[in-house]
Amino acid sequence: MKLLMLLPLIIFLTQCAGSGVRMSRSAQEQSLAAGLLTQNIRTNISQKELSSSPNCSSPVVQRVSLQSSARGPSGNLMTAREHWYVDSCGRSVIYQVDYYGPISEHTAIDVKPLR
Image (cartoon, one colour):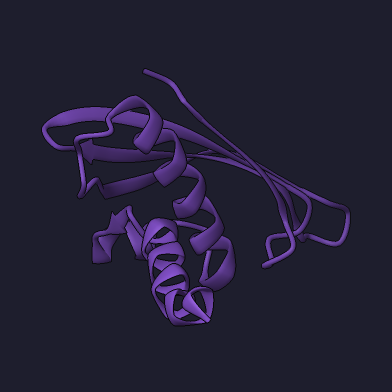
């Protein structure tokens, strides 16, 4: 019974943890990602930020820049690399985001900090 009472709190906290990294409007417009894919990248960055800067509760993606991209024979974007510039409570961190396959919510990604 007590577990059922805690379930809404657990769901709320899980959702908050996944959205710990906010994005500026310009960063949202600069990225190739949208919707669920953006949320997946933000969750990935949140987890990395939580382990490297546990006292920073409000990291923000300030901007995104496209580093490289490759198109397939039909002209579809097949791979791409972006840098996501994060302000982590005054500390600048650049995350390299690699996209593998056509850009959609099912695109495989790799996210890693560069510094």
